[in-house]
Length: 459
Image 1 (tube, rainbow, N blue to C red):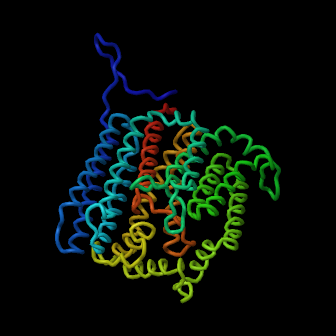
Image 2: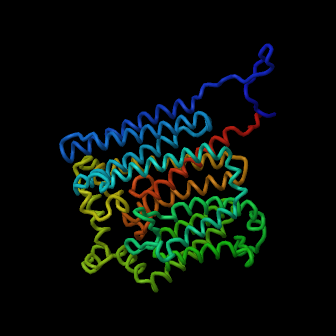
Image 3: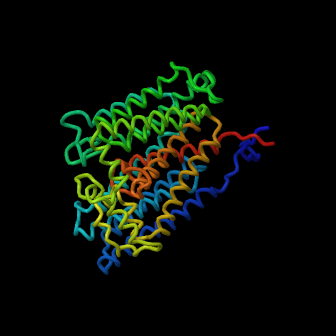
């Protein structure tokens, strides 16, 4: 028996639908008001703690950002009324806390106007929100994306190759993952990861039966045929080329890990995890022995407090300063605007987690991790509630992109794994990263609305 929308007779007009109150959107509105209030309060605390006064400039820009967030909420009421009510408020509060911490470093450095990283972050956040609203409005059903599976693959590969072009590509901090056009720099790999997630979902839906049912068992584990290993070998080669030519270990791990996890979810075969993990470990060992900068990362990770690694260019200085910042924060932190995050290099981008840990302490850092956990859990819940395989795989892929970024970045800052070049979603400064993550939020919202609108069986 199929569950239907409530209908009532209307004299002279036939059957009409009952207007159901948008409880999900009302809950989202309440959470957004709380999130915007917390963000404004955080900026005020930074100003009071750092300069002892309140400046209206950043608060005004933050208010305009809140208007855009509420604008996206209004758009969802019309085009996706059944979308998940928690995703947008969580993304908004993470974005706002990141701006507050970045703004503190600007106050310490005396950066104002367009030289202020926080001002640029607010502008990029506004652009990212406009892109997210456009995605929600234009894409009315996620299944449309499946039609262009191989188009997304082609565009993703073009974006990955752009930084290698002379005159366009730009090397920053040793990694060649940027393109420079006029006064603007952009990281095309951030958009490529979304396109690759769409491509992997469409490809695996088509090839799932071959990849999951055919193969030979070894010690109780079914391994694929040699000719079916082609896709994973191609993605492994792509990841290794990113390490070699673009000098970006984190992006390589993201691409390869994304494909292996989606492959495992599509087929349910543990052998893909074993093969993928073995291939990446082999590649990492080879890279650490043959590539100097990878070897330096491993040395800094294994023995960061040795004087040699601390003093070497590209050594463990940044990592150790971040650890000292976390230690200075203790359990409850120094308070917003009262720490010294500027002592750690790149505390506004790669090491913003150590800046947050210093000012909000271990308790505040755990709260941030809980927000990420909620965002990822809602994404996975949306994925497994869907009935179509493409939507399930796409939801898992987009959620895993955020999860893996958090693990790689926070793991690197806390010395769980070697440092990589990824950025913390929504928190770290960077326009390309913000835009990509807000587009992921928009796609998850679209997925959740489609899932809730699909017919459900009533037992």
